[in-house]
Length: 247
Image 1 (cartoon, rainbow, N blue to C red):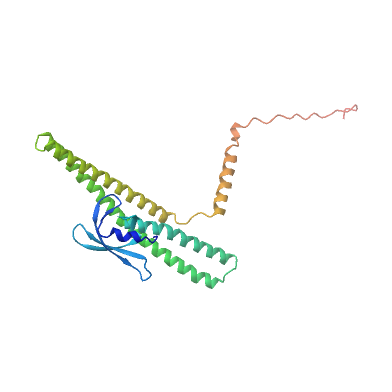
Image 2 (tube, rainbow, N blue to C red):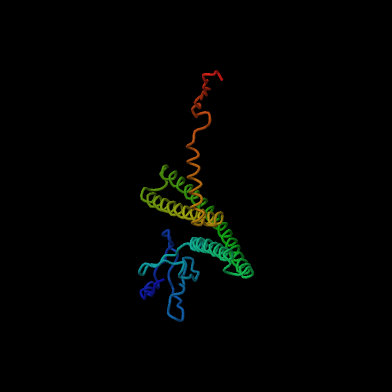
């Protein structure tokens, strides 16, 4: 994050999440000995204090927004897992080219493999956490729709005045919109992370070229007609020349 002295002007101001919901107020910043912003202390709307690292925050002048920690972690895994895989593949190529010893390759390979498996386990745990958040959003939308139906019923029979109805209707609709956006974000994040775990081995340029050649050959082969579609071969008649002697 770029250093910005105006961040101090955010102290005491409201902070929201990326879906527009109020989270609390900024109470203070924590700085490193070198003077860089490290984290933020927030007084939540329920009166509790929390500390969040700046990597989970988005700054726009004096406005500060909390970004989803799940999305931040997922993006980290999506960067780290393919990178480790590529490093391990590059290590294997160096070994095959005899540029490093077999012993060194085995040692480094075990190191990369261990780190990769650890990241995969953590990513899988995160996917399970995200799935629970998706379920929460689904239930929340369901409850909001129930609230909307009851609001409509009470307004229809005259128990709620028009002005109160319109205010409540706008509140419920806005929250339905926010939760649906949040759910969609979680689903996209989960799918992205799942795809990384299912196919974390990126294709090399050489493999892509090989696949392209195979596909081209398949197209050429497909253009050859079947035997039943080929024209019948011409009939060749051989005539033996008869000499004067009748031989």
